[in-house]
View 1 (tube, rainbow, N blue to C red):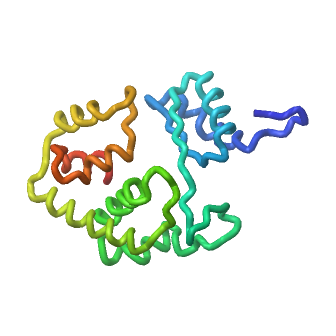
View 2 (tube, helix red, strand yellow; view 1 turned 60 degrees about the vertical axis):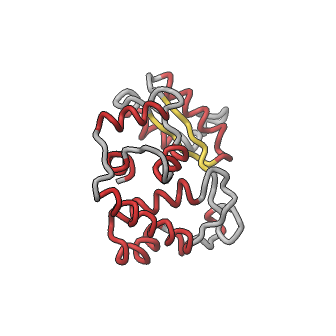
View 3 (cartoon, helix red, strand yellow; view 1 turned 180 degrees about the horizontal axis):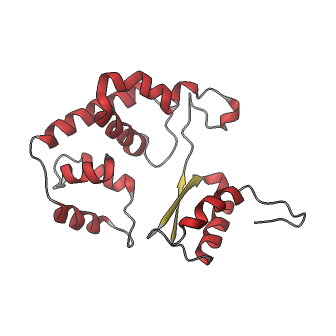
Length: 188
């Protein structure tokens, strides 16, 4: 974490914030850009030495206009959360916006990271969220016990459910999913 010239790695700031949390939670999830893999492996090792249970998830950059590049190159201003809120929240309301954005970021963009951010596709996911919430609100429920069993069936390892798989199941039309408690507990 500190090099031969006594210069701290930039992750020391993250460590300063995460170390107090190391044992206060069942698991810490580190989400990071693929280019930072070596640094986050180091952060994982250090946090683990202090008793943290750590999981790491590589998050690929979302291309904008077909290009995946650092934010310092610009072109991302229309896609900030603030810009999306100003554009879509008045028409969809908070609950549909939150669910629709999650559906878009997980299922709409998928795992590959090769699709460019698309405001029309986001709008379709917001419409889908509204429809899903309307159907769910009409009694397509389930209870907390059913939700726990459902999530346990998806868990690849204790405490971790792949968000892409979970979201795909939520959106599946012909699969028994406890949608109402799932949306309330996970997507709200």
